[in-house]
Image 1 (tube, rainbow, N blue to C red):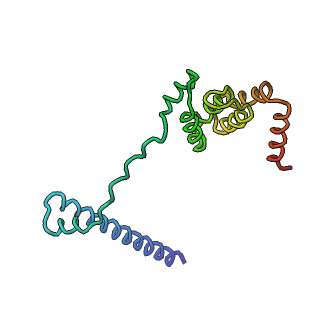
Image 2: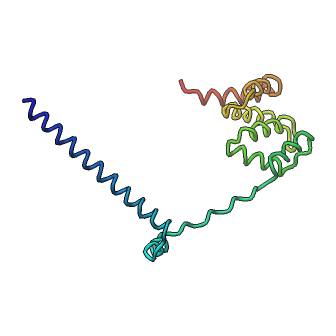
Length: 166
């Protein structure tokens, strides 16, 4: 009983070893051929190089659509942000850029470059908190407690209760 099992084991081990060496040999010859073409190119190598598919050149990087982020920050600090700055922050915010979301919330809260909108700032600080911006949740709470009117608070509570499913 042991002898047939031993024999089957050795046969399967030999088969696996033969398949492994065949695979390794194929890779070796492919690499050897490539090395030969590098060391001493001949007409066959030149033909192989000419026949291979050519890759398209990479696309040029897109030009920035609006002002640079550092310029926007400088404008916000100086309270001189304009509509282009706010539009760029909105585009970046839609793309979930955490810094842009927080800065846009600040602008909405303080009326920098845009009409003052505490309710929009509240929602933006909530989005920033979801993007792991430090202190965004605290800022959202502060806006809720100190900046929103009673009607706006009720609107927020109604909207947030709709999001929570029992």
